[in-house]
Length: 86
Image (tube, rainbow, N blue to C red; front, side, top):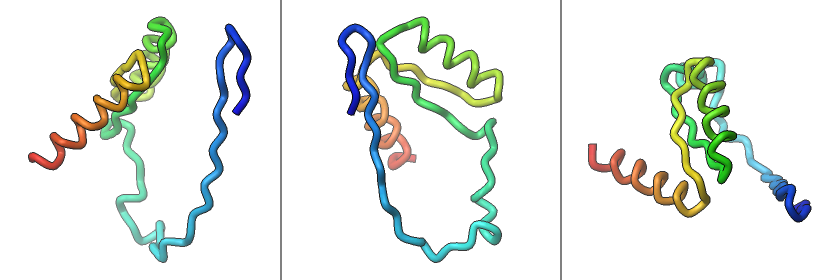
């Protein structure tokens, strides 16, 4: 973690993963289609959120915005609950 007062904080996380045994070449779901993606942008700066949304939408990626970590967590929980209900 790096933090500078008035500037912000950078968190770096390293995750060691094991091989899944799946072959991405044979897995058609390995292809990404921007039109099928939705990204959650989390930032307390509304201008930064809107800018990120514009850039993503230009690439054909839908974006949802949250202005805080707790709001983002609630949005993810709600989306997950809706998936289970379908």
